[in-house]
Length: 498
Image 1 (cartoon, rainbow, N blue to C red):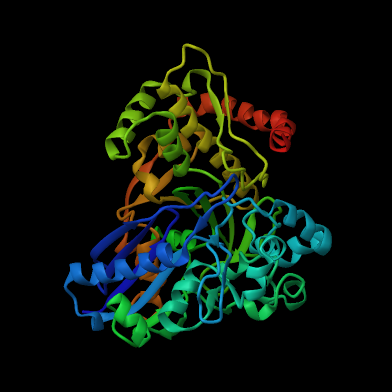
Image 2: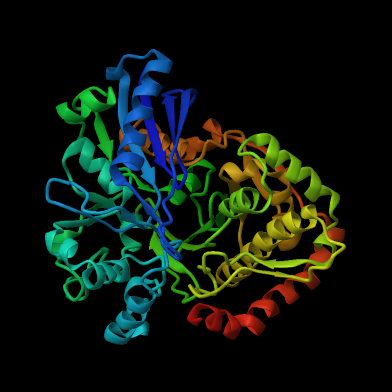
């Protein structure tokens, strides 16, 4: 029987799935790593220790645990966090840690410079994306200004899936969805790098070749086979960014399908029939030709709950500590006894696109308990999610909404989102996420699966419906949530300056 290997590199862990041609998961594995935060607004990964070691270790473990012959693996797919900016030599050796996606806000000044240089409206019209902390171009400009020696030695600027594919095959490739996040380099209309714009920031030949996600772009080399346990010459697809792979794993494919990804950060993808450019969000080709997507993302999510447990509670780093917090939060009523929280602890991405936004806990009294604050934190993420979903609905009403990601196991989080946003969410049977999506995409790439097979492989198992009484309460809170940001925006900038 033929098998598909899918591995996803996340912010705090890597996950792998071995899927057989019937659609049955034969093995899963996980490897934890850390996200380095060397200073305020900085977020980095060691590409070798975090990305490649994650892939290599999980590949070996999945093959060993399943007991299959590596030659039975028909194709390999990889997804990973993005967009990231990793400068490497021509041989693929990292010159510094990878600068991560929108959680890294170091290039704020470079965003302003490039908007002035290129024209903010011109960039939006050509790329479908405003320049934000999510964009690769400003991070490359930051590198040129602040680490000129590294910049001079750079031969390529790559992201996570591109780095893995090169380690496997020797080819530098990015899929169209991932390339669109290399703003302002990607031209949406031409579906190619915009040479004139790119050359004002870095040489265009620093960028990978562009392919469609499921395209077989190379084969596992002899050297990579020895490291990973894979058979030499195994086909490798281009792969994609983790959020898109996660969306595929839960069946987001058709116009009106929308994914809410509950992860270290929250991320949203909605498939559209046509290209839509909106300055609040990001636009991209989706994973297959003739499909489009609009995306958004919070700068925090599950990472904020981890921060609270680690820094504010003194609880141990295990599942029992989260369970204790959850029980306390469930005892707090909707509205957290009057506490509102802005979850902007790492700036904020969409729809406000404000790297200087700050976290805020409002309404505290001596009567409040830890469970109230924890519930307010989760509700704050829920209000930020609704802020995005309301904008998406203005572009195109959602046909079906699917919940994905490890945070789906947090029933308070998912229920709060349904109650606050007034939406129904579908949950698929398998929630292993982007790793499953990568294996499935590899199956499409080698002809084993068709896109619609995901409904058979991963059927809907449950639904989350809003509590009407809670929704009415949250409607008033949501007005206050948005006003809290607007009324404190100037003070947030004063805090940064001081």
